[in-house]
Structures are given as structure tokens and as C-alpha cells.
Image 1 (tube, rainbow, N blue to C red):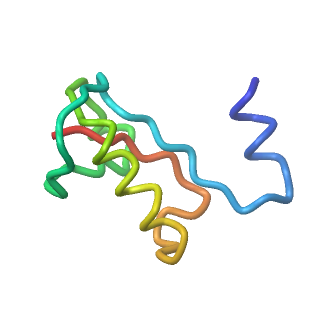
Image 2: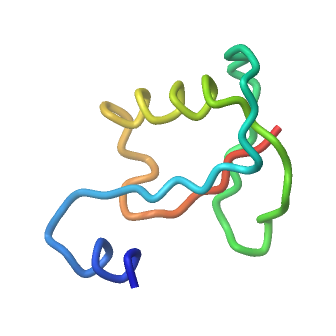
Length: 71
């Protein structure tokens, strides 16, 4: 229901679905899985999730999408 509210809103949005979060360092070498057929479980450091989110401020390639982030 939360995602539906966001998707139906007039907001610019990207819903990021990280794998299992770890406390590791930022690597910048994570995978962005765009299509549901690609989605899988995995891990990712919180720092790499933050890296992706900050990049999305200017890069609109995932606008209106729900990517999964893993290594």
C-alpha cells in the first residue's frame, strides 16, 4: 500500500530496494537490478545504498522505477 501511494502521487520518485544491509565501506561496485526478472537476494553496504541515492539527485535514469541493489 505504501508503494502504491507513492507511485500514484504527483511526486518524482525512485523506490530503492536494497539487499541485506551491512556496515561495510562504500565500494561503488554494486549491481542495480532494474527488471523484476533480474531481482535476487544479496547483500550491500549501507554506504553503497547512500552512494546510489545521492547520485539519483541528479541522475534521473531510475525515476519512476524500483531497482534492487546488491553486490
